[in-house]
Length: 337
Image (cartoon, rainbow, N blue to C red; front, side, top):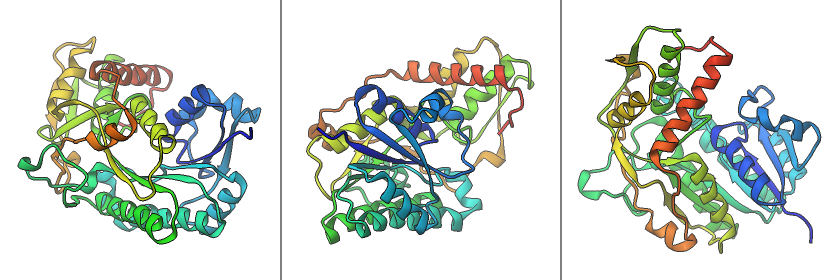
C-alpha cells in the first residue's frame, strides 16, 4: 500500500510542530511541511536530524501571499491530507497590521484552496479557523455552539471569518473535501510569547532566573477562557481528517477547563519558585475590544469522532512553564513582551 502524503502549512508554529510530532509517532505517513524561508526553526529543532536525513519529514518553502509558491508546494507534496494551519495568528498584532493579517489569512487561504483545486489534488483538507470568529458573545449563549452568530472583535477574528467561509465555499462550490474547525484556546510548550498564558510563563521564568524584577505585567485578566492542551488539539485534527470526513463540515473544538485569565495566572504563580511576585496591569497589553467569553460546546465534534481532551489543565500549565524555564536557561536574551 502506498504511504499517505501530508502537507502541513505553518509547520514551524506551535500547532504545526506538535502535529508533526504526533504524525511521526502515530502514523507511517510522509510529511511535507510548508514554511517561509525566514521562518525560525526553534519548534522543529528536535526534528532537524530527520529533516536533514529526509526521514519522512521534508520542508518546502512557500508564502501564503505568493500563489506561485503555494502552487509549487502543492505540486511537489501531492498530498492526500492537508492541514492548513499557517496564519498571522496574533489577535493584538492584527490591530497594528490589519491589512497584513487580512491578506495573509484570507487571501492566503484562498491561495491554498485554489492551488488544490487547480492541480486537481483530491486531498482531505482541514482549514483552521478560530473561536475568535464568535467574538463578543452574550453570556446567555454560552457554551458557544457552531451556529452562534459571528461577532468578531479584532482584525484577526475578521480574517478568520473569511478563512472559515472560504473553507465551506470550496467544499460546496467545487465538491472538495474541506472541513473547518474553530479551535478554542489551546496552549502548551512552544506557545508564542504574545499570548497571555505564554507571556506569563515566560515572565515567571525570567523572574526565577533573576533576569527581571519580580513584577509580572498583564493585560485583561477578566476574560473567560476554556483551555485545551495543544497535544490534545493535534489529536483532534488527526481524527477530523480520518474519521469519516464530511465535506463542508465545521466544528467547535476545545477543552473542558474554564477559568478567567486571572485565575490561569494564579495557577502559574502557584507553580513558581519565587514567592510574592507582584502583578501589574500594562495598558499596552490591552486590546481595544476583547472576545471575553470563550466557552465552547464541542458536542458535535465529539459525537462525530469520539474525541475527548485528556491532558489536565495543571499539566498543560506546568509543561508550558517548564518550557520557558528551559528556554530562558539557554538564552537569556528575551523581550519582556
